[in-house]
Image 1 (spheres, rainbow, N blue to C red):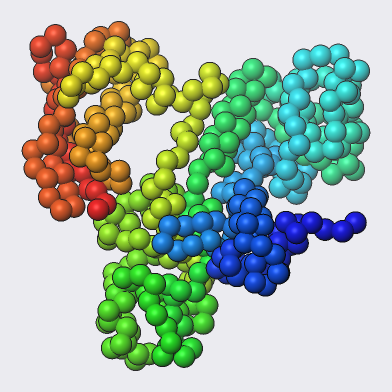
Image 2 (cartoon, rainbow, N blue to C red; image 1 turned 180 degrees about the vertical axis):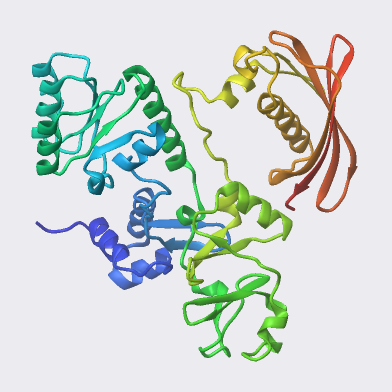
Amino acid sequence: MTKTKAEKIIEYIKGLPEGTKISVRQVSSHLGVSEGTSYRAIKLAEEEGLVKTIERVGTIRVIKKEDHIVGDLTFDQVNRVIQGAVLTGRQYLDREISRFIIGAMRTEEIGKYLEDGAFLIVGNREDAQLRAINSGAGILITGGFGASPEILKKAEAHKVPVISTEHDTFSIASLIHRELYSLSLINEVTTANDLMLKQEGYAMDMKADRSRFVPGESVTFLLDGDRFLGTVESRDLPNINKSNYKKYLYQDIHVPAHTTIQSMRQMMTWHQLNIIPVVGDSHEFLGVVHRREVFKDVAPHTLQTGMSTEEIIDREITVRENELHIKVMPFMTDEFGTLTQAGFMRLVERMVMMVAKERDIKNYHIDSLAMTNLKLVQINQAIQLNGEILDIGDQYIKMEVKTMSDGVLYSKVGLMVQYFK
């Protein structure tokens, strides 16, 4: 079947090395197609994650990053959570679990859900245990029960683990659900590995010909082949050589691939950077992350209601002039019905957000704070927060946030907020 022009362009883009700059004119000239066709195909490639357009940089070929901090749960991970006793199959604990099955049904019904790599949570029901082992599933025996020699022998033959725990089935299900939820949150976290691009324009190899190197930013990353040496100010490049580069290194500016967005925001704001290098465990240079990618909006974690805790709090907030009003909701309190520090800090962050928006400041983070609690805020209590700027400089805003209820002062928070110009 003859390929369309758009398909040929996509195929051409897929064959380009990561970090290659792409333009409509270049694609049109290389493939002999109209600029309109090239533009539409490049936009389609951007939707597929093959390229990324960055302000002041252009359109760059990127490779989608597939790895996350933590993968699927293994038998070993589950056992560390429940602290069970491995009766047999310790050497198979590193296998990933395909699904969890609660053995609260008849044995013939359990068989419908069993598969290789599954994990059956069951009591002392030997018929269900045998059915699971024959299907290649591991077994978690609840209630402190052990396993018969026949079960252990079968499990060893089928290379599956058998674990026993003192917990009951309900407690185990709750523990595993919490662990799965934690892993899902970890996998949703955006890191430097997800945002970095391989671009040579910001890095200079000390071994290569430096005469034609033109800095792409106010800072440049020095390399020794693929090895990252450090960050220097671009204006110092004419004076730098292999023997003296160390005295020009600009502090310790780089991040590992697992660095979160919030950490990158703090470092880029502190040093007023537009780019930051990503460095591997062996100090190899992996790529760069741009400020625009770090400071764009990130979707918050959501609850089973479909809304995040932040969204629920924000929905209940009423803003009147320079004040934030809210009635403390149950999930914002601890077991004693007192407003938690986490719930209170969300309100303080919302207050800072309001003040920053009034000043047209989009990129900022709370650098430090000092809190004085005078009275405890209770469940269903109506409170209001007032934010006042005490001083503002080139990089910092000094603020004070007061919490009031019925005219009574409950707390005062002094904050230093750093912002990016």
